[in-house]
Image (cartoon, rainbow, N blue to C red; front, side, top):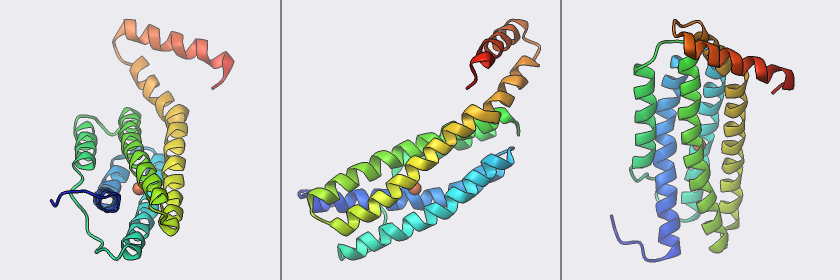
Length: 190
Ligand SMILES: [Fe+2]
């Protein structure tokens, strides 16, 4: 990898990282959708796959604006996050507990992307690349919305069902704790 000495080069390097991260994600999301036991979560992953494909197109457009070839640079962070998600799936059964784990894995991915797009957007601003700022902000907004949607899914039925599957286990002490928590929580709503 050549040395990065200017803000322009740093910006292009950030784009290459994001491009590779999104490409990896277009391959991981169908697997995550397949692993989800709830229809709602599966739909959320499928919707985000469509968005991710558009996000790849936006990155290509920014490369074009900068007269750079749209190529990636292996994003080790995204590879690691996907690997951890895979490991969680292979160590769990097809239950709401796995769904809760899939949401957690997906939110780690979203937070990585939010941070990457946030920095790239700021650097595009500094470089006076207004069209890139606009495109990066569009993606940033989608990533934030996806993150919020995943939080809502985690708080609603999925984790509620995951707790129920703990309370039906044979572990008496844990059962009591979980039941106590859910009873005390319900009068206040969520
Ligand atoms: Fe994305």
